[in-house]
Image (tube, rainbow, N blue to C red; front, side, top):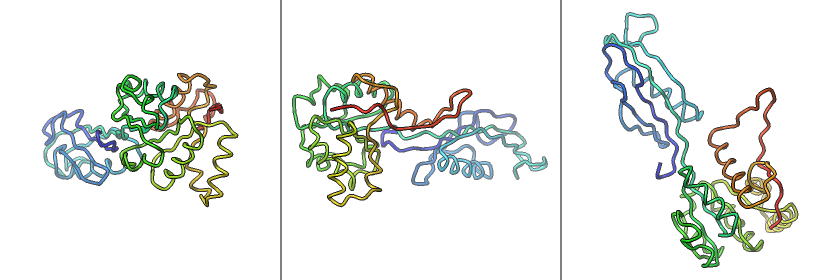
Length: 265
């Protein structure tokens, strides 16, 4: 979790009779394909591993029942004689955000992140806007220019980059650098004219449509947000939804969107 990686956990949640893994026995599948722990070994564990690998691929868990009775139809080739229920749980990577620009929106977003156990750092070229008083729970607070950001920070450490700066030219400079260097989510706070001008500039530099398509602008869910706190709620809610998946509305089809009310900066 501290490395901000997803994993799958399989846990024995019920055991009846003689079984190799007692209630609470667990194992974890890491993203690199390696396992930690055991739920009992033998044929049971090999079948559970298949379910665990599928859960990592689909990002969905489930509950599975196994009879360790070779003489029973559908039972595993085991003579233990008992049965177990295994809960397979997909645990998404804990987000780690880099906020470029230490202004009011960044401060409002940062307020919510520790409550969700999300990590974040903040960068700005104005030292007075990245103080411990403004961002007391940030992992790092760095006063850097846009050109220095990826020399100071490792882009692989972050899941999200939010461009929330006070100067569109500086936002553009960091955005241009990030399209090739940052593999995660890129969000740009912008009005429609700001977005159009920035994208036109990037196209003149030879940036492809595919790369521009990675940029989410504006940011957050479409809740009509206006104040910094409302924008922060829409941004954080969008992150939560990306981790949990869309929830259909009762009695209506659900359409997802990453576009919120366009905001002037």
